Length: 137
Image (cartoon, rainbow, N blue to C red; front, top):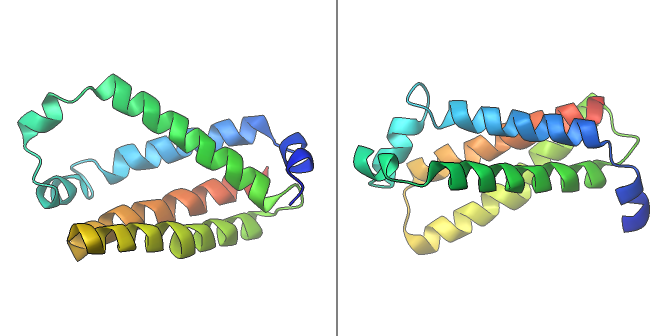
């Protein structure tokens, strides 16, 4: 990959939209409607722990990290990407790189398989939607 060309070909609006979508997916995924309660239980976080967290900092940094992920995914899939190639790239990145990395970390940290499914499942959805947006735009 030629980094200069990849950087020049970035569609900044689609990167921003993909970042916002990832943020929205995370808000829904980790809500009490979906996996939030199970995630909180697996990490042994109390409601008080959640309430006392510095949420503006957490959400702000999470958005910056999601923006970086969208930016690099856009560079990775390239200008000629399509909706389907974006979805495929998102699936491959999330399953082959992200989920395997999380899995390795969770094995050594002795985290549960349930937590692995919650967190890696989020990234699979996150990157596939992000890839779809980036590929379609």
